[in-house]
Image (cartoon, rainbow, N blue to C red; front, side, top):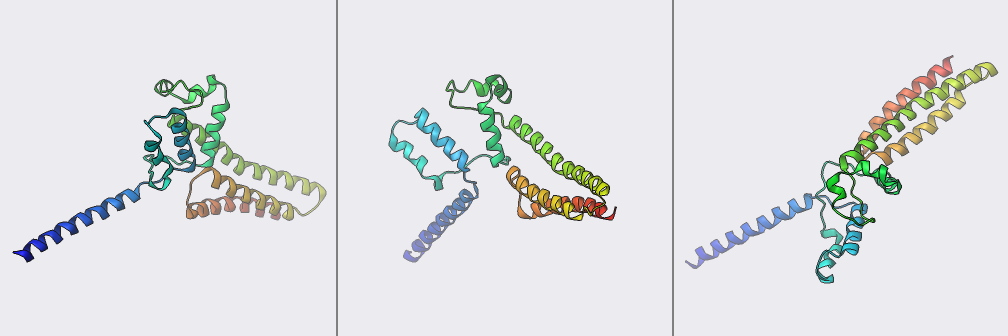
Length: 207
């Protein structure tokens, strides 16, 4: 009788421990807030005082225990820059990137709510323009160098390599800042970009 009771207690304890471990693993699967989001929430706590006392608000200082419910959004330094610029624009312009429900949430001039979809569209448009510039401008520059060197009866190879290296490094820097991509994705994009530039460098050298 005693042994049966002990076995039952052990099974219950093991079941409880398993459930705790599973819950802990599920909790660790949630992503933690970014530095900017964490600072934003802390600033909101400081300005609005939503809770009754400082003891209740002290949990916001335990950053390792805070999770973020944000999903499906790439957040980079470029997103932060765009939103900071939108805050400094006139209200007639910044209101384009908000909704009526967001504007009605607060009357505090230090709190801004922007539509995620609208900001993403703006960031995507700016990113597309920058990528188009990075692809077209070095090609135009290489063509101009080829014409200049042809008139001067010189060898454009050295200048072409300089353009190749400069825009490749610029491409890596901008791609890292604008997009939250993995290393293998960066390598694939860099390989395609280098292949395009190498084609024009080779054609410049052969002419």
